[in-house]
Image (cartoon, rainbow, N blue to C red; front, side):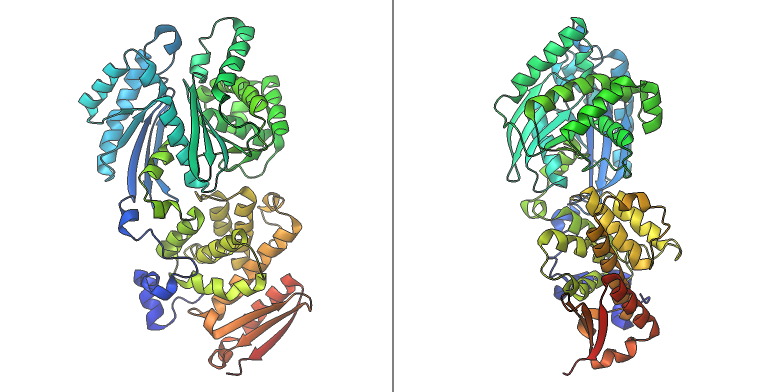
Length: 528
């Protein structure tokens, strides 16, 4: 793509004002990240005082699909020994207080104050919880909100909705001292329940292995009462679940180690739990980069998950990296913002802040869409996302732009994307900058796509490659693509003023697109 397209293009490039024109909104809808409601959420700080860890997250960026401006966690073990003593761990209190003092200062420096602070099972169950809450407020200025188990379940479920707007099923959030379930139906949180099934609490159960097994089975039966059986999907939230999912990836040799939206079957999960039990924990920890503190909780978490899955019998198991902290951000969103597609909003934000000509993605989308015929909304949103992201890596070295694009699509914090969709976007953007993918270091990831999906992603990428260099401002008004699948023909209809734009390089890229599609080409001039 050229650096600019005349004075108007230069103005859009410098200040992003292309997004302010009404004709730039459709078919995506007016972006909300520039509005006052979204700007109010542009930097939100949340502190989660859990039974096992204390974490500060500062969200920034496109409010509907937020970027993590800052993320720090300390494994304090506040709830260690709580089942025996009824009190918080003295060492855990000391470490947590030190972390909270640091977080309070960081929040002020980053413009995220006042921080929203929530405390969960350990603080609500410990007899010295109120005393520690008062100490935190006195020594840090932070005001912890100690929530009960059902509220914890609601917020975690809202976090899942942040990344999965249409989520249906049951959310299971495991912490150090408790585990919660919440039903999701029709974009709303339904029935909720809480239990003492956190790994730190389970360490204190008497009766050996037999006693522990009986206790877990009894608590799960009580926990799941009143919730639907055989849900469409079980959403797993919490560090112990993510550690198990990462081990599942390792056992399977899965090529994309992005935990969010990772899917497992009951059969696969059962095999992984058996595999974990049969292998040395230190070796597994080294292979997956899991911390020693987290790995020590995995065996107990495995026992809980095995019983839970056997009881609920979900059709699919999915991992959510979004939980209570993201749920608190979702809590502050107006309904209009909640209703937006997180993928499209994030890509709009990326284009507005990183592309050479913000607003061009919409025109490119209009130009390439005729190639895909009557596709549904799910495929359209992927085409939109690719067109919006197509030029956001332009500052990278030309030899590596295709790699930067692929990495961005497959590993960036983009909500509402299944793993195959990440790879589809990655392949499309790779072909935006590179004609061939042969010999790519990303080849193992290509196996997550069906052959037809891989061909379609290549077609989209080469169509963007052609459209972006054909015209730096308005390919959708200067030319039209027409695809006739049955005749295996691709037509390019040029407006008269655009005829000189179809030079040798444009012709070569058009030919490359046609080859990827397996069609013959025709070039015509528009008659009027």
